Each structure stands twice: as C-alpha cells, then as structure tokens.
Length: 221
Image (cartoon, rainbow, N blue to C red; front, top):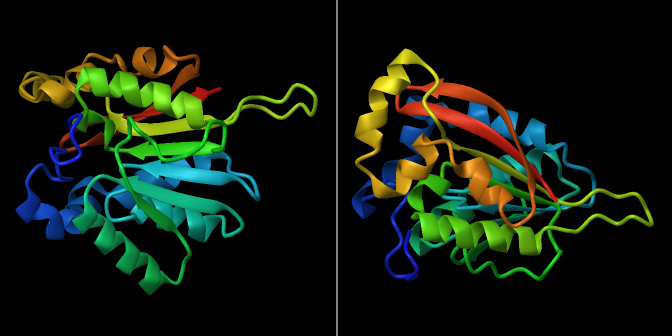
C-alpha cells in the first residue's frame, strides 16, 4: 500500500491473483490455524467492538463474529474488489460483519471507539512511513484504560512476517529483503514501530510457514 488509495498493493501483489487469495491462504499458508490462534490470544469479551485491518476476503473478521456473535465486527480494506468477495462470503455464512473501504493510516473510526484491532498478514505491505502512520491511527482508535472502573485499554493483535527464527527462514531473509515493505518485518522492528505511539508491545510466539516466519504480537493501550 502507499499513501494514495488508488495505489495500494493488492492482497497477492497482483490484481489478477485476487480470485485465488483464499486458495493460497488456506492451502499454502494454512491461515485458519493461525487466525484461530490470534483470536484466542485476543481474549474478546461480550459487547466489544473489533476491527480487522486489511481484512482481505474477510476470513478473520467472519471467524471472530462466529466465535463471538455478541461482538460488533468491522473489516477494513482498500481493495473494493476483495471487499465484494468478503461481503458475499459473510452473507453465505449468515454473519453480520461491516466491511469498510479505507486505508489503515486513515481509519474511519472515532477516537477511543475500538476494543480490539487485528491485523493478519497486512503490515508487510506497508512502507515504513505508512506503518508508522498506521501505528498512530491504531493507538488513536483504541479505547483508553478507565481507572475509575478498572477497565484496561484496548488491544492490538498482529500476525505478520517477523524476524527469521529457523535455519530455513533465515535463508529466505535476503530474498524477502528485496521487497522494501518487508524490511521492517524481517529486521524485527514491528514491536518498536507499533509501540512508539504508546502501546506496550509483547512478542507472543512464532508460526513457521513455507514463506517465512510469522510472528504473533500483542499491544496493550
């Protein structure tokens, strides 16, 4: 993605591959496995508002709604074509998810209005400056802690490419470094970038795939 809404990078980098997105995610990346783990990590509570950034075809947002039907779930993506697929999929599954078109660094949600923000394999599409802008936007929309009631602040839950942690993924590192947007991921800078606005970031573990190391991150406002 870039700063222009007309210049985002499609989910598989090339628009003609968009119809094959779910096939790649399910059979090559095994997305349902790690997305289920990401949902469990988030410890979602009844009545909370959840936003999935870079939602693609809506798999994660739909899974959240199915697991927690009492929550309000939004999916945001810059690609109107892939959002059409997501809306059709949600209709087939019979779940109510709101899908919004927009960029992650200009979120269409009010300050302090979101309890959980998810991002699954989207951050590596952003250049450093847009990662930083996205981090500030996430901090802005997450709920602040309420000392009077003891309620904690909102949370960020990321799964994306991270610093290689196995011999195989270390061999892939130089190849992935050819893509400018992935450099921050491969260098392990995501906790620093998303912690800069004020979130307390933690590394929650890794998931090894054919394409590289996927890292689970948790951020608390």
